[in-house]
Length: 260
Image 1 (cartoon, helix red, strand yellow):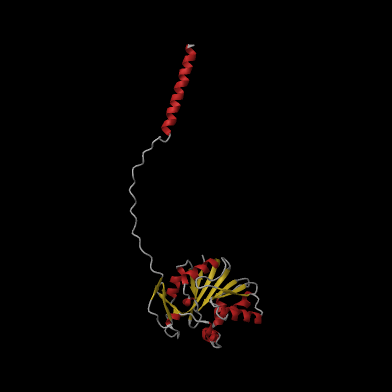
Image 2: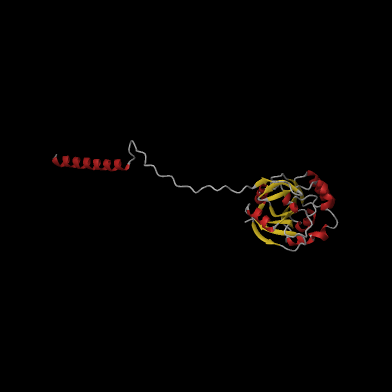
């Protein structure tokens, strides 16, 4: 009997010790709030520079600014004669531009602000297994492109009606984007470029062609010209990497950027 009582006492002691261990590891039934921790000192918030602003309209300007540049007035569809003038190839050496793009037959190319399709139909034969998206925000321009595509049986030309803040292109749908004397007129350049970055495939290229503002001999209104520095600033702001400035055209920059 004494031996049994001793075993009972040992078991009871072990149970008490186990219970004591468990209780010390549990949350208290009425926990006290921890002592307050001093909040970290935040660095002062520096406001981002104003992307868009206004100014007194200059010659050919809209009165709206983007990253310090006044956005130019838009050339309407009544300017088709200027786009299709017979001396354009000689003056601007547009043939050199198409060669500089190093097109592959399977490329999907977007001609942004295509207008009457001057470059669209010069690119189309080079991408016979691909497609040329002629995008514009003016339906009148796209009607001209559509009619010409039928006449020339350019089956790989696809007109797309864009918006002032979106290209109308699907995500990851194009290898190459071309702007010829168009970007400086975009009323919403940042939003438009973000949609274009989304439309580019990884490694896709942007060819930005603008009259050289650095060259006073280029007889174009100031608001319709751009410096390389300004163009790089605006393209870098949407995540595009600068590749090169192809200096083969007599009056224009050919600035190449790449989607990372």
